[in-house]
Image 1 (cartoon, one colour):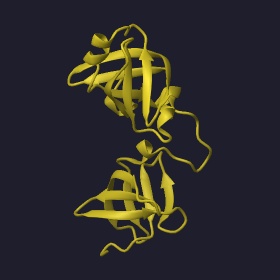
Image 2: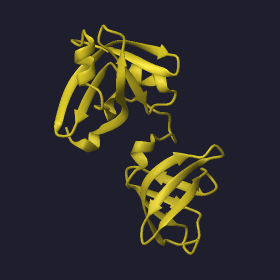
Image 3: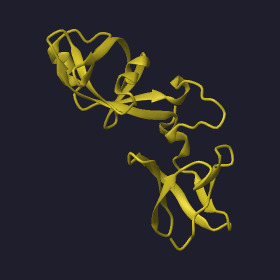
Length: 168
C-alpha cells in the first residue's frame, strides 16, 4: 500500500485512565467520526502498526479510544505521538459532485483562459467558505465556491477549472 492510499485522520495525543485507553486528536469533522473507522494504521517515523479499535467515545472535548491489545497505561504511553491513518477505501461513498479534500490535493488548476495556475497544495476552512491553496509560479488562495470560482472538478483527469484572473 502506498502512502498516497493513506489518509491522516488524527494523532494519539495522550493516555486516558489506567486501562490502556488513548486520547486522540482527530482531524475528522465532526471529530468523533474517527471512531467510525475500526482499523487504523499507526505511523511514527519509519515504524507502522496496524491496530483494531475496540471502543471509543467523546470524553469532554477529547476523543478517547480503546485499541485491541493495549491493556495498561504503559502500553498506551508508548503510542503517544503516533499518527492515525486510514485507507481511502474506508471512506464512505459520496454522491455525484461531492469530493473528499484528500482527492483534490495535487490536482492541476487552470483558469477559463487555459492559464495553468498550479496544483492544489491544500484546503482549509475560513468560516465563510473553504479555500483552495494553489501553488504554481506563486501561491494563490482561491475561494472554493462551486459554480462561481470553481467551475468544474475532474478527479479522473486530475484538473480543476476556475474563474480566476491569472494576475490576481
